[in-house]
Length: 313
Image (cartoon, rainbow, N blue to C red; front, side, top):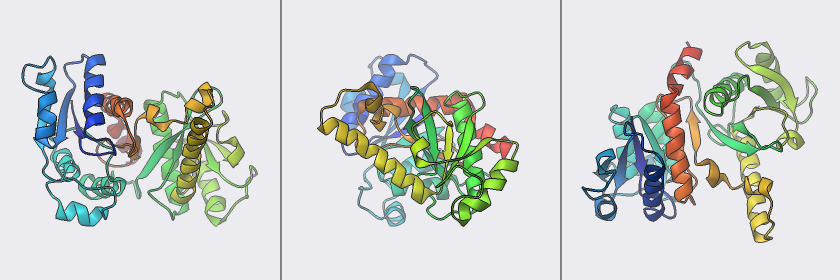
């Protein structure tokens, strides 16, 4: 397998991306895993010179341009074809790599996913999943967290199926429970979107739907997959991120609250596109990049994209 990594993406690139690659290589001796590193070759090559113990697993691809965080995604991809993100998607679409990882411009990663890799047949709208640390030490998946601010009930049903498949094959839950985020637990609660989505989720035999959950249930052990529109999901995600910042600022030492450091999970997957694409946080450091590579490897090992396709025939 060949996993591509945008070496120029993120606030601390390329120093932390380089450290992340070295960390992965030091802990993973599987010679079948090769890495394509895309970025400024002058900055990369001194760290991966020929003769290095793992140089045979590394392929450097020069990118003369970088899409900055503030740039308009579509415009930047069009005007910077030699950027690390544009080259990454070109290689992925051409079948020269099997997965693509970046902690760079999130919008550019989403645009590239939707227009270069494209949605899987039958998936109306791909979604982004994110992780919620639970009180029992395990992790739930929240989907969508920002790709689809306005949704139809059918979209929430597909998010539920995509999330359920990810929870089963990547997070290792045998029969993941799916819950709809709502303002009340009873059937019939919520806005028109939730009221209409509920029966669709309830009737679908491909998912283990347990009903509505409220905001106070998100960190409990009620479900493995939480479903909502991207507007709601993004607010929840950013609120959860703030918890870790507060804990750190107050110097509170607690194992549970440490799990709100989303770097420990690596990146978040774009669910519903034809190849594995993983988006990291802009402040990702070495450990996050290592975890993103491991996630990409598992998605490939599990033939996760093929499993999605078989469920959307």
